[in-house]
Amino acid sequence: MKTADVLNHMNGTAISLNGFNHDEIGDEHLLTGMETPMRADAFKMSDEEKKQKISYHFAEIMETLGLDLNDDSLKGTPNRVAKMYIEEIFSGLNPMNKPKVALFDNKYQYNQMLIEKNIQFYSNCEHHFVPIMGKAHVAYISSGKVIGLSKLNRIVQYYAKRPQVQERLTNQIATELCEILQTDDVAVIIDAKHLCVSSRGVKDDSSTTITSYYGGVFNTPEKIIELQNFLNN
Ligand SMILES: Nc1nc2c(ncn2[C@@H]2O[C@H](COP(=O)(O)OP(=O)(O)OP(=O)(O)O)[C@@H](O)[C@H]2O)c(=O)[nH]1
Ligand SMILES: [Zn+2]
Image 1 (spheres, rainbow, N blue to C red):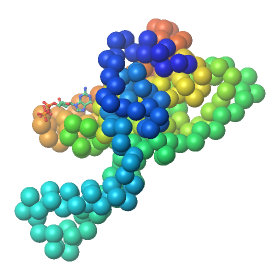
Image 2 (image 1 turned 120 degrees about the vertical axis):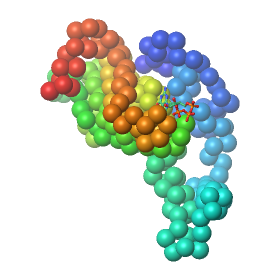
Image 3 (image 1 turned 180 degrees about the horizontal axis):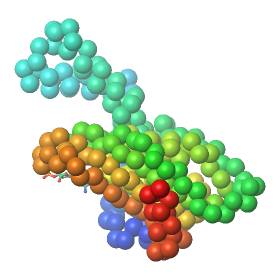
Image 4 (image 1 turned 90 degrees about the horizontal axis):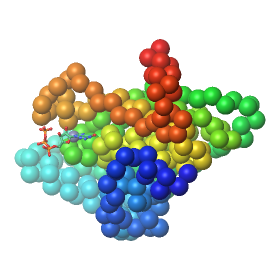
């Protein structure tokens, strides 16, 4: 499936280049408006250099807040945060960390939907840099290839490990699955809690946010109902 076709599914998603260089960044979502906005020089600096820089600036933030960086418990925090950003919670910004996906021939002649339900993920809101946590459900119908189940979870985790908004996370996962599986018949539903809504600001601890992508045959009332029935059980 071509990205232009995916774009047609997105109901008017804005096209934005953001100075983003496809070859250098290696993200296939150029021109769809759903790429994570990154500069063309995003990977000129090594991970080690990035960690040192983040550590320096995080120490500055802590100093500004008046914290004593000589304190036993606090002194390692700038390094801890830098390591966590680069190696863990924002590791999905680096295309080198994209999961390698194993595909198999559909020898089983299984031609109905496959749903990977309740994929737990943690992400971070790009507006406040506080956690988003939730569950993703992904479904597809094979066009000839079958994907290893764990790879569905890994694709969700890869895109979650970026500063995100839920709409983009949903569409990035869907586009990736369409491209890998060479089919439009993909659905992604995400139900997540945003700590920027629950722990601060409006402080609503009970609301969650649901987003969805229904492509190909999933974009019919019957299939949507069938899918939702599976998810509700
Ligand atoms: N559409 C969308 N909005 C999000 C997401 N995560 C956080 N937001 C919202 O982004 C908005 C940022 O709005 P601002 O008014 O600039 O930020 P703010 O002053 O901190 O807003 P409050 O959260 O209302 O206090 C907030 O309304 C957030 O709830 C997301 O995944 N999708
Ligand atoms: Zn937020």
